[in-house]
Image (cartoon, rainbow, N blue to C red; front, side, top):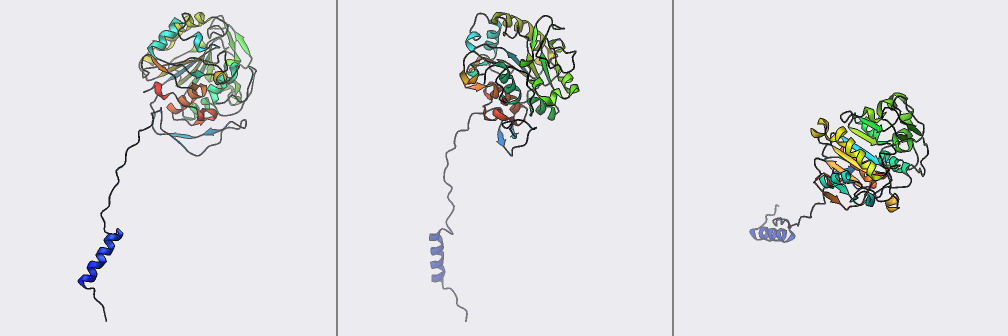
Length: 334
């Protein structure tokens, strides 16, 4: 015999269900939004590490996916030599450089990563000093910024003043004169030539490394530019380097249609200073771009790895070695 619920029983069941929350209307709690972190050049998400070319034990790379980035058509990196920030910023011996600082931007707490010169160039080129502690001739293995650029079907050039461009992959420690005129080239200031995946390929080497007489602002997406031992302030006074930069930079880049009609950036830095701040001394980093606010001064701590990380982030590359722990220079590109 079937039993039927009475009205009273049904009412009692409904009351129990409501008290248990089964029939209660949902209540959404009010949440206070947290402020977003400051924007950087790119939104990055680290995914699985990938193997690099065979190299030393600490030569690892972490692949980074870039989901938002302002494209730069060309990047020019000019590396000067051996001057602390106090010898450049505000110095009467460097009026042109200081005019660039006033017109564009400067990082005042920027450091080299080591002494002497060569490991700093390696840091800029490949995200590590590779345990190099001298200015000798080294033959290294491992992935570099150049390899990343090639993999992205982009272009790069190394311009070294007084480099003997007529030679096929010149690997001697120095050279003098040539089409660039008087002056001296030093291998220790040419990081590309330290990697065997370049020097072992004569055609690749000849295609990518040349002297200043072949400079062309439109020739490459990335240009690594190193003046000779006088113009970079290594062997000559600050004033002489400033005079050279005042003549060369406008003529070769700033006054060209390539610069005027593109969204590009010029970075000017020095390899190392005279103290041990950050491992290599406090040196200037000048950032020149159409996006950089005039007179912008950053007091955030950066170093050569930050500069490499910035280039990688702008173009969507994964970070190389110690650049993975460095903050990028996104504040210069609001």
